Length: 142
Image (cartoon, rainbow, N blue to C red; front, side, top):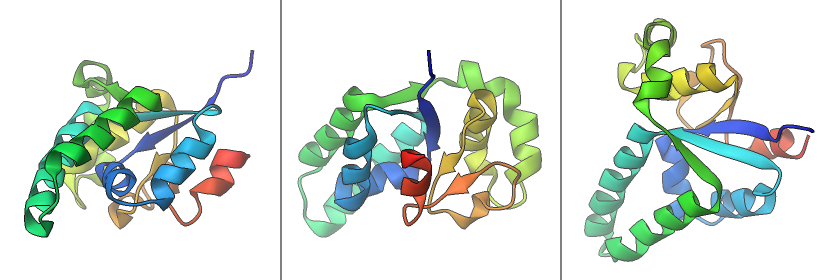
């Protein structure tokens, strides 16, 4: 049995999937052949940003939260801190100087031996494959 490809999503990718078209389309196109993971704190972070952005732009946050829920139901697997927490020190050693708040994403990638899909340049050069939306399809279709 061939294991599906895995990728860890940063909160900014979740937001792009909620507010944008391209990221959501990529996820929908490859949903059957990939496994998408995100640490639980990224879902919380995305929800906070959805409310803030919706308020600022006069959008219905309920509709946007529903889009996030649909993404989770489709194929996004939240990872609880009890699983990735064992990797906290290694994750902080890799990203701590740049943005220590992002350690759960790094820890989840270490746990799953998976690349990170992000637009945050702080992840680049930490010893884990990192993909941006511009080139993630290379990974998704390979």
